[in-house]
Amino acid sequence: MSLDQKRARWFGVLYLITFVTSIPAALLNQPVLDTPVAYIAGAGHDKRILFGAFLELLLIIANIGTAVVIFPIMRRRYEDLAIGYVAARIFECTFILVGILAVLGIITLRLEVAGGAEGTVAYTLAAIKDWTFLLGPGWVVGWGNGLILGYMMYRSRLVPRPWPWLGMIGGPLLVIAGTIVLFRGNPAAPALKGPAAIPEALWELFLGIYCTIWGFRSDAPILSESAR
Image (cartoon, rainbow, N blue to C red; front, side):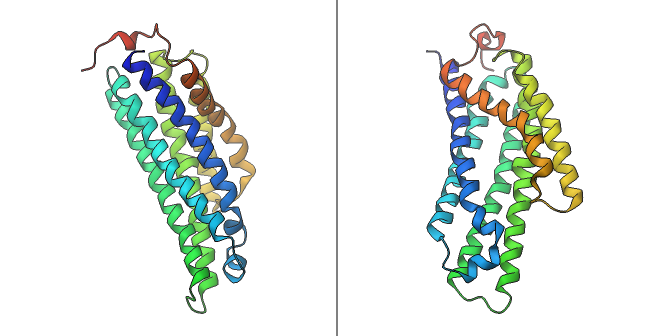
């Protein structure tokens, strides 16, 4: 197996890891985000929340890994866009990291008395977590995974050409929906974000499955070019 095909397999596996980590983490964090004030006043489920934070740390590693392993290939023709994809992944992960810290802050409030305003602080931290999800996975992803990666995959023909259209269409949908939610001022509202995220989610799932099993298309011209 060539080095590029090994990169392709890692690219796919890392994308699958993003699904395995992000979806359970979102479910585990939900009690804190739904009722942060009640959470810090009750018995709490700290281990559940801490495990969710751990999964999101693994998500950060997988996210950046997807950009790192494909960069040496894409830079052969699309160096500027390849750098942009790495940058987009880093920005997305920065938002995720801030969200992790916000959730961990709520755990600290539950364990230690912070004063009479701890309920307000908990609600604020939960709101910060919601905003980071909107601006990172719900907005930056539309540019990075959708438009930039979708365009590079379409032009390079590393995967069957019809599939990148999911990213090139789903990315703008995610950006538009995220922008509308941003100006409405309610990042927790799922009505608009959920349907808009479906094409992007299918695009990323396709990349994970296809590249893990088959790698990149062997007849893609970019694979025959030497690294600069």
